[in-house]
Length: 180
Image (cartoon, rainbow, N blue to C red; front, side, top):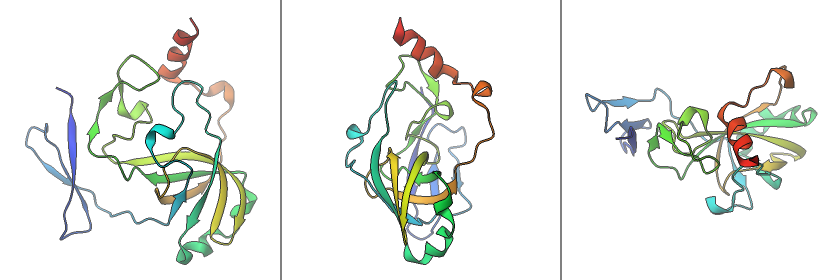
């Protein structure tokens, strides 16, 4: 049986509660913080089926990151960066699977080596190109999130890892098999 979990919301408390159905003690784990959105994505995607997936999927969709007005001062000097990391919430995902077979491979992999939305903590990470800023609205390219996705944080994209040192893990093997 695959380990899985069910995400529950405790209405009396701002903390997420995870009931782990296959945990030996059937324990309940409380996350020690409650993330609050700093804004929302405006995307052309309204259904997960619309988002490009698979080997060589291109994420070229334009959209906006609409940051809540109270967080606008935090955008000061962001225009100097070409790309941003966007941390966001898989707000429509329920439960998780620790092992799954991604749509781009016929072999199972651990959730932490995939981009599956079915994660113990439903947090997404995307790199987008910053096209321009209009006050609290960032115009971006490269979206792979649904419209109205909650944004948890933004960080400038900085990488000192050379292309020669990067490894693509199981994805490189899947791409090689697809070419055969």
